[in-house]
Length: 93
Image (cartoon, rainbow, N blue to C red; front, top):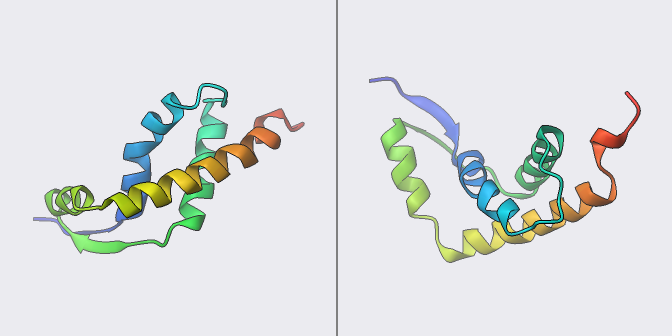
């Protein structure tokens, strides 16, 4: 059985990003904007590294409380506003 080191917060953000974007119709969903939003969120959330098997990581994710959801949504809102006001994909290459 392989054991990996994972940032559970990265998995948590990935699992919740699409739903949050679906509820925010006025934001660009291109790959660049999605990546920028995700990076900004992860830079604000405290990382939570675990060394465990995949099944155990998933069970830890389901144990996140409402506080983590609220923290994610606050970081998401800030990240969306920052990306909307200065989208990287509109910059000259």
